[in-house]
Length: 321
Ligand code: APR
Image 1 (cartoon, rainbow, N blue to C red):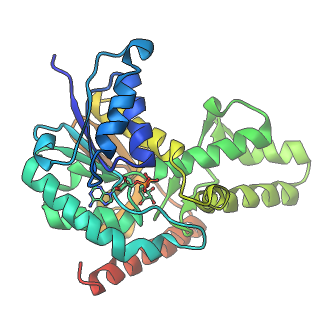
Image 2: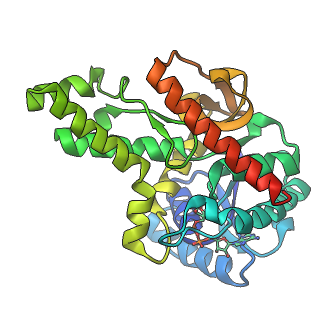
């Protein structure tokens, strides 16, 4: 079996971690594309020179030429400016839309059969724009947000309960912004509801709710928390790791049920928008969007988040994209 070809569009902070993780896991041969001359060549050379130590035979190469992405099985896009402190994801809209349009044209012309995972922000708008420019089928255009948001939520729960994060299961739905919807009702530790464990820990339902509310709020603002500390850019280790989880699900046809930004056609009461929902990821990309019953409060939070995505997409369209 020949190795998969994985292209990274954007060789910045996230792109660099992605290249290293893909190489270390021998997930496929890596081509890193960036518009900055020499940057992807330098980063990939540095990673490739660790191959003896890391024990990987996969190729890791950099380029400034879109022709080198031909034959990609998977393209992961991080091209775009990251947020700076004080800047909302939406502030990035105009600049990153321009970048995403050019990236979409490059991918469409040179790797028309690839599956694509988008990480660039504002995520829901960037995925929508990429799909619009390329006309690729919905199953092959996927956004990364929910895996990261859920991982953050799970981490906070594990730290609070003093148990391994490996046993925590959570799901965060909706847009990748402040309106995202962590589903508290189904958050569990190997099947035991987190709320029950919090109530037992504090012996008080009101206190348990207060602690959970704080974790939900922290999850929604987690990107901003890292950004405020880093100052010069936004989170990159965790977004890269999250995209690797999705890439593995696709490359190994795992049929994992993960929260991803997927195109909805009536599911959850939404038609024609990309929103974070549970979906089965396998060899063909998004193989199925999985619906489940939301209670009134969850549905209303999701509706609110979907409205924020609609506003974002409308803003992007108003800007001419
Ligand atoms: N084509 C290809 N690459 C581009 C283009 C373009 N048109 N424009 C910019 N880039 C490259 C930059 O040269 C840079 O190397 O995209 C890279 C972005 O890297 P960083 O600035 O380090 O940003 P990073 O932290 O990797 O985040 C990238 O992901 O999470 C989101 O909000 C984040 O939108 C941002 C993106």
